[in-house]
Amino acid sequence: MRIAIVHYWLLGMRGGEAVLEEMIRCYPEADIYTHVYAPERVSPLIRSRPVTETFVGRLPGARRRHELFLPLMPRALEELDLTGYDLVISSESGPAKGVIAHPDATHVCYCHSPMRYLYDHYPQYRATLGPLKRALFSHLAHRLRVWDTVASARVDRFVANSRFVARRIARAYGREASVVHPPVDLAAFGGAPAVERDGGYLVVSQLVPYKRVDIAVEAFRRLGKPLTVAGDGPMAERLAAGAPANVRFLGRVDGTTLRELYARSRALVFPGEEDFGIVPVEAIASGCPVIAYGRGGALDTVTDGETGVLFGAQTAEALAATVLRFEGLSFPAERVAAAAERFSAERFRTAFMAEVAQAMAAKAASGEAMQPAGGGAAQPVPGPRIAAAGRS
Image (cartoon, rainbow, N blue to C red; front, side):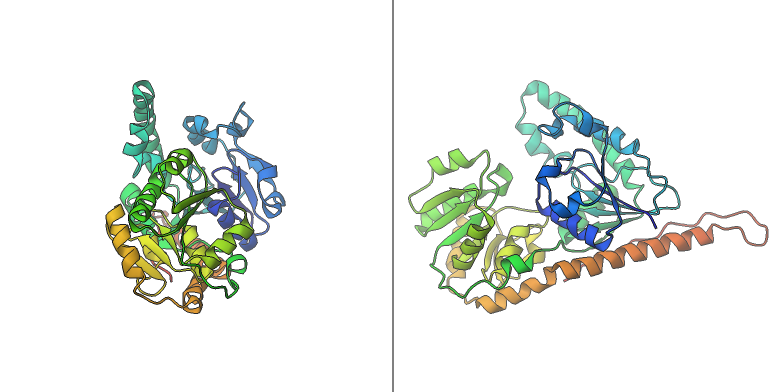
């Protein structure tokens, strides 16, 4: 069996690339396709497989500003020749699922998120642009949404990374999706040393508007409690300039420092609405409870009263009140860390391979039903219905 994995772009190692690594472990013989590839920025495991770029990767400046070539990506995907593959797996956050597979091939899409800038976050993206760019982006986004909807029909089975994303897939494409949570490196974050937590709170985040780190800064200004912010981004300077003395900014930190921060902090503060959110699971694996905004992927990862607490309004007032509620509860580190086992890489591989096997079996059954019997003409049969199934 020949297998192709189509990943949106390979320009660094983040959550999507960690999922890709586990897909490669599931199917070590797979060939990789992507829009833009920078081998020096990805892991040895990814580099060990043949990687083919679309024509986008050969355009000048694609590695530095790949987002400028978004209008060309649908056509680039459709020009890939995947004729010889029996199984196509698309790993989608940017455009990836729009490839044209052989009719007999099975296409499974693992969706980290329908493209945010076309759907949920479209008004926010559009509002950041000047008049001319706004008009161009509105026209482009409309055309991309039309193509994206058409491309969704090329997928035999959708698998979402959270229940939140499964609902977004249903809204955007009218398709149901199973849920398989992405993997977390429990070996890296689990088994944290038994150290005394110093009472400080922690934010680990890219400093961009939708992460809402500004809420955390304002809440801790009111509380007067120590807060450490690890991460960098375009809002870093403005957030640091307006922060009180009890809030410190570390910038980007390495893995060792991050593990130490999780191990020593009283709780992780997670004020944004994420599709899944790998950071809360890293914290939980370290025995560090989480104070999270109770929408999006946090509903899959944080259990109120067991691994942390949830707040219902995305405001500094609500977060400050929830911090005080949190301090009246007990969260033994061993109990918190044990909850992370359901996000292990082994569980991801087992669940994802089961979804692929089911999709291939349904495709094969559909193909058998198309065969003419007794000399009669072949009759079309409906495609397989994809059942939503949340895993924990």
